Amino acid sequence: MKNFLKASFILLIFVAVSCSRSETGELRGVANRPTWKGINPYGMVYIPSGTLHIGASDQDISNTYVQRQKSISIQGFYMDDTEITNNEYRQFVHYVRDSIAHTYMDHFIDDENGDQQIDWDYEIDWADETLEDLFYQGDDRFAGKKELDVSKLEYEYQWYDWRAAAADKGKSPRNTFIKTKTVNVYPDTLVWIRDFSYSYNEPYSRNYFWHPAFDDYPVVGIDWHMANAFSYWRTKIWNDYQHNRGDGINSEDFRLPTEHEWEYAARGGRDDAPYGWGGYYLRNTKGCLLANFKPGRGNYPDDGGLYTVRADAYFPNDYGLYNMSGNVAEWTSSAYYENAYSFIHDLNPDIRYDAKDDDPEAYKRKVIRGGSWKDIGYFLRTGTRHWEYQDTTKSYIGFRCALTFLGRSINDF
Image 1 (cartoon, rainbow, N blue to C red):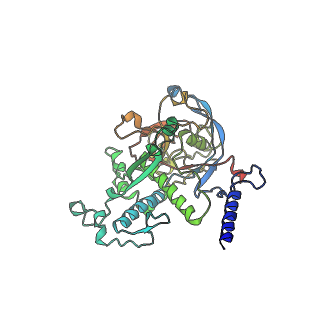
Image 2 (cartoon, helix red, strand yellow):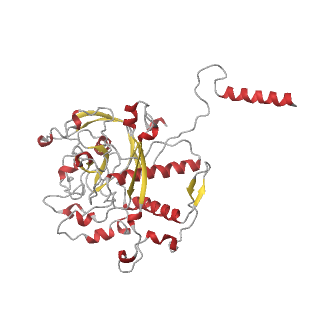
């Protein structure tokens, strides 16, 4: 019996060893690799790899050193076909709200690794006194209403400082480059009042984010950190979904597009096109305005929208992207430098700087693109650069996500 067990053990070792190398002695790679069948994200369109000439599409003397023309190449990627809407962002807010409530009520379960995770199968009883701290109390209540204290809706997200890790060359521990930040995720609804002096916009401040009439309008009042936190959360729920399905390995992370990914996508495959629709004018042959912006000297409703409009309003560009010009300007991941075009690489160019809270204001500038409902036509041009401080919220800045495509072309699948 002992000899039989010994022989069986030796056989098992042989089988295990033989699985880790080619039985024929040939180089065939590692067997039993995880499967990957690509990703076709809902609400996103594929932008193929290509080359473009960045910068002004027409004579632009005043910005010669800010928007120098340069030929670059961009890796293929996916991009949201519309700006992130109020209802899409509300899913994130509700996730944060519910996760905090589950934590208060101790709704946890041990996962397969023995770590505690929220048990989402529990129902949340919002009348439970355990959750009282999540609502405004005492003098903070308005007209006796029981309302959620949105200052409690905080979310922690992480990112990895790849550039610092590359420069370090393995000298420091990995956790040196893992960065963490906690942000309040509720949109700053007061931007509708703060952005305009002597202007009656209180109805938008009260209703824009939560009212169903605006569900499909772009979310605003979001700073750069909040947009990054949303992208991190979006990646997390996608990865959890794939893990639960056992659906192979995961793809790249959702993120903000770089400045030049955004410009490449906005041109819609039309090189040197001043606007996403390819033409030199803001009106079509029938005289209809083609985007939501500030026409003339301030005839806001002339284009069909007084403030923002639905995220899928107007015609999309040739890539299928809506409102790459106008409606709301959009955050990118890139830091803003006036002379960036003088030194950026011509392959997937990007400039990053993770400004700290106590850094000088000039370090906190991030590129925004596309122009908005309150901007003149110049800012709608695909080559126009502008910036805003990363910790600033505005009634005219939103965002959309990008996702790097892994592979040569979508046609490979």
